Length: 475
Ligand SMILES: Nc1ncnc2c1ncn2[C@@H]1O[C@H](COP(=O)(O)OP(=O)(O)O)[C@@H](O)[C@H]1O
Ligand SMILES: [Mg+2]
Image (cartoon, rainbow, N blue to C red):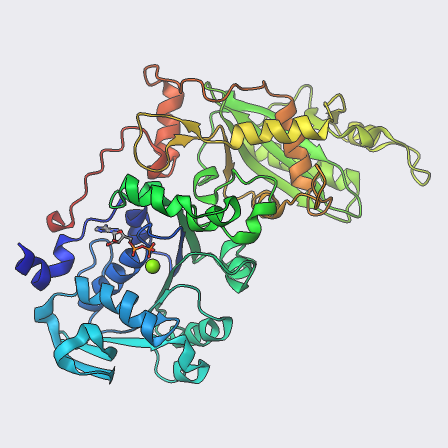
């Protein structure tokens, strides 16, 4: 068994759930952000071996191909990424090895320059301390970054996969704060559709014993734990909605039954953006944010037209042609310039905006947090351990952007009033919904129609009864 593991490594790889999510994705720029010892390097290394050998369980990979394994330094390469590649690469597929340091007789203790496989593929090893120039030259079909590379190395690597339409993936603990990875990958500011990330934490790695976790935990401050246990960006500690995990709360749009349609909520703005969202609720009081309207510098008349257009497309209910909505009570104030209030103007254009929304900021924030929070389900022992009660459709990009950057004012119990328009309409809406008690039992009733519907459309990691016992030998 030991010998076979050595010879056929990757055939014995059993990815845990979050590793599988990553391996299955066909996107071209994938990142795993995780705590220490959650299995990031293992997943990145196994992916590299699958690409080089062309034996990927979920994707057709053409061979021979060329790829790079990028580490921060030579020593880290030897001890981490290189070790992981050697662990999973079937020995009988190694045709030749070129060393940067050390000898071929002892690959593990030396520093490998590249491995040539019997199928003609090349696995090149690069280290960031060699400098950007070493990343110029030949095009590559795939590149794996183990831990966060400097931005210039990343940009150079991006050029290398341009003409091959190659794949990149990175596995890292975000310990360095708000670097380019935060902007370009986590916030995805360029709005690149090929970019996706997953967060993994200790509990996701079944190969990590309770004792090992206890030991890791004992030495850490809360702040440090955010990064080292959960893989959260260090600077995320100032976030209002820490509970938000894009992987869980953002879901692909599905056909929402009309009986779930509930209300529209508007945060008015004229020069600032006006933010409005369409909210639906299912039979279990789960909230779905299904449509977004978000625009600055437009008249109330124009906004009302847009809301009616969305409503018509969705088949959203109207009463005698009038749309109901919730709006901030500030919309009742008369400005000197305008003869009528925003509420009156909306009403002239068939939007009846209710200003009776409870405005206490603190209560609103707490209630949104309740809905975002994962409700524990002790029967689930894989990640995620429970489900939230608020889901945002992927098309609501401005709300997703705001929720990821909504921050507390330093030393004050209120958020910074910036990029908070969608946050405000969300708060108004949630204040119109019941307070929910956390920690109570998760619904265990028989599967209703609405539940089934939800199941089909949720990311598979969120579904109940996920008995996806995949074994890639069978494929
Ligand atoms: N799918 C897996 N199969 C076997 N062992 C695993 C698997 N995933 C992680 N491990 C083990 O868990 C530990 C941490 O994994 P590693 O990838 O090095 O963590 P990270 O890079 O996140 O710090 C290692 O001992 C590794 O061998
Ligand atoms: Mg690692």
